[in-house]
Image (cartoon, rainbow, N blue to C red):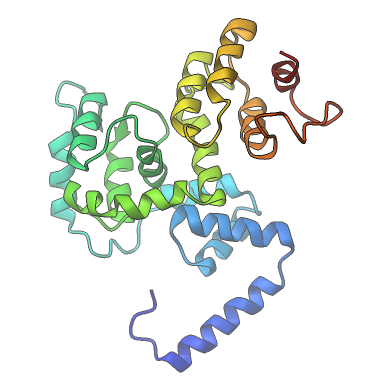
Length: 262
């Protein structure tokens, strides 16, 4: 990322970056690494933005994804505009790629619209709502990923998919998905939507995901709060199918306690 810098100079830069990291506490170091993984940015960039955001990871990522891009790298402005025009919703007054355009975009990048890697793409675009990308989200996302055509995005899918395979990257995509899928100005996620997202995200990762959703549909029937959404992931990671490791005196949401008893 620092093309043209001599190995010796690069060594001094790396040492300087390490000194900065060593001054941070454990929570701050974790936020720097998570920011760098999600934003595909250097830790130095992550550190600067997180300081500006007063160490609020969500605010920092929003600042990063909504800020004008100083360097579009290997993308051509004309190609980015042409790619947007290819998928733009012609029958809508708003400048955006709608549901139909997203479906065609998924076909062209070689994935099914229900493939969880589309959530990684949406995160990179800084998308605020499911079912559409604004022009700014779509074009900025292409430049940020260094790809100005669908073919180039398709070539990056294996790399993007890796973010679903490590715990930190997956958790960031999982947390992003809650806000992405819920209705604007609503604090909770409709149950049907939440179950659909769980089945997409946790398929192959949690053997009880279908039972969990069946329980919620039969016994709960209400929207899902962010706390329940977050804790469901932790439960899936910490507690086995046989419920070994579950502590009824733990700080799990009541829905998880009821699911275990059920």
